[in-house]
Amino acid sequence: MTLRVFSDRRCLEHEVPPGFPELPTRLAEVLSGLERTGFSMVQTEEHPETEVAILSIHDQAYIQRFHQAVVAGESFVDTGDNPLSPGSWRAARAAVDVCLSAADWALDGSQRRAIAAVRPPGHHAERAMAMGFCYFNNVAVVAEYIRRSKGVKRLAIVDFDVHHGNGTQHLFEERGDVLYVSIHQHPFYPGTGTAAERGRLAGVGATLNVPLPAGSGDQVYREVFEKIVLPSVRQFGPEALLISAGFDAWEGDPVGGMRVTEEAFREWGTWLGQVADELCAGRVLVTLEGGYDLAALASLVVAHCQGLEG
Image 1 (tube, rainbow, N blue to C red):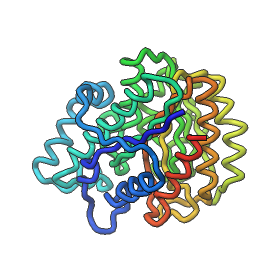
Image 2: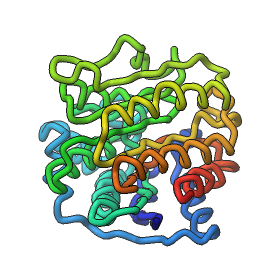
Image 3: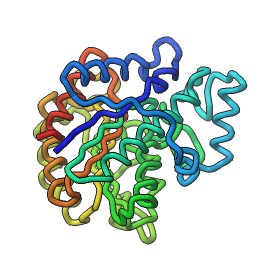
């Protein structure tokens, strides 16, 4: 089994106002930590399918509005939690480039784990709206790319960010070929993700939300993984596994309210890697989402990757 880390320095070009938690330093620290640990690092370039892949998920009018807002020097797009800088468009596009390149490598073989170390994050981005620090829904874009380009008919997305991935859920909730599983703090931003939200129309049953109260720690998450998440993924039987990896459930995170330790993130990697070995020829693609404790973030991501490595 081989694990590679994919990234692009353009992702650092998205700058944010003072006091804003989604800092370029987050990614810089993660990349430094992964490199020091000895993981294989790949710097990507523009991907030829990025424009088409983004259009498969996001409305053209929204894409144009986002781009024009950056060109015009506007401070935000859509809401006040989506700041803009001159490099925001390039960074958001680069995040998609990285995810597609990582998918190409992970899916064109077996026993391959790929980590798309990117920012801005993506799982709050809706089809026609930026939201929650997110501009393009990276995991949704790459999921649709995999389905269309790699002959994968069924795939699963497991999201353990402390916030519910409203954008990812809404983009796939009417479909039965993508299983979306989210474990998150509730009630909390963005207010969605109740257990009653199970999908719609052909997608009923392919959305699985596990809302947890603030203060939940390792044991609660362990029971959720063992009794709900892993059995559900096994029952669905995906051909590829995607992970929306947010590290803001960490006990020291300044944004989240959970009590998860570093060892738990390692365990989740181990368990999800084992499921991928059973069902998906070991093929896993991880996309980075949240996580805002700069002193701990790199160690948490390294621990998760080490778990995935087995």
